[in-house]
Image (cartoon, rainbow over the protein chains, first blue to last red):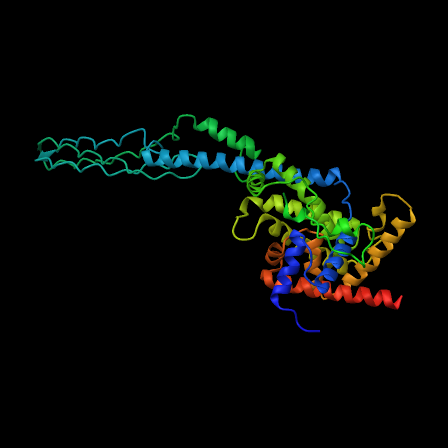
Amino acid sequence: MAEPDSRAYEELDRLIDEGGTAGNAELAQLLATVGTVRESLAVPAPPAKSSQIASVLAAAHRRALRLRLLALSLVVIAALVVAGTLGIGEQSSERTQGGQQGAPGSSGDGGPGDGGRTSRSQKGADDQGDGPRVAGDAGDAGDAGDPGEGGGGDAADGRGRRGVGPAPIIEGYSEIKRDVLDILGSDRPGER
Amino acid sequence: MDSRTKQSGTALPLSGRNAVEASRGRRSEKALSAEELEETVRRAGRGDEDAVSRLFERYHPRVYRYALARLGNPHDAEDVAAEAFTTVVRKVASFRWRGAGFEAWLFKIAANAVVDRHRRRARDPVELREDSGFENRAGGQESDQALLDAERGSELRALLDRLPADQREVLLLRFAGELSADEVGNVMDRKPNAVRQLQFRALEGLRRRMGEEQSGG
């Protein structure tokens, strides 16, 4: 049998899709075969079992829930990022104290007191993650010791105290956190 | 109007009594325009259960018929159809309308599910094929004609099974899955013209074998 050209393939395909009269006997026979194939495959599908529909819908429901949770998480993360950027989060509530005034020297001129050392703020106690660390202010330099009668006065120990900050305070933070934990079903992250 | 609903108007010497009806192109489900389909798929991707139900209602019969033709077992076909839809729901949010349409994507998933089912069967040979599912399609009518149709259908499916795999796949996707040649090409990763060629040869081979069966029997 001669190999049909691509026009015959396309013509047959068009007739299958659109209908019409075949141009030659061979195509007509092939169309007849199409009718037979369609007839043999035209099996009425049984009504889908309720369990099948339920499983498909459950999958859809889970997807919707996941998307909502993801959106909520993104909102919370965005809020935390914004708060961190604005510096609302972790700051020491107490400023570093300056050095104390040096004790009067027993003799001689009193030397100047050392400046207070820069303190570091402590990490805010927060389960949601560390915020940027913010350096405490440098302590003020200690005052010079009073002139003494004897030797030089001791230098003031201007050590600043370590700032101890409370947990970061964000408007509505606790509420958002509680909502997220409610959804996650645990009061501890990582225990889903 | 769907172009597939026009009649071919061709004589059907080898077909049964419903062959004229069967030779018509058909889309048995309620019409859904391309825009409606896209919107429905998008909503399904957001977990909209109504949209998922609509897709299920529209495509389940076609996926089931395709799976049944590939597997020959109604229980397996039902399972495969359900698995395919569950996969669709799980992945539909990541589906993108690039080239291949939703139907090609769906049938690719169904084809993969069929392959998985074949593998499972190979691992578990105890699973038997009790009935083909095609025999009951007369809906309980036990007329001679219904029995004749069932027998003829059974013979034809045996002939389909003897076709080369790619030719058989084209016919099943085309006539059980009701996909166009372009969509079949997307499912099989072939060019549309290659699909048309396979289709032509498959029908030719089928017609020849049917003729041999008739002259031999």
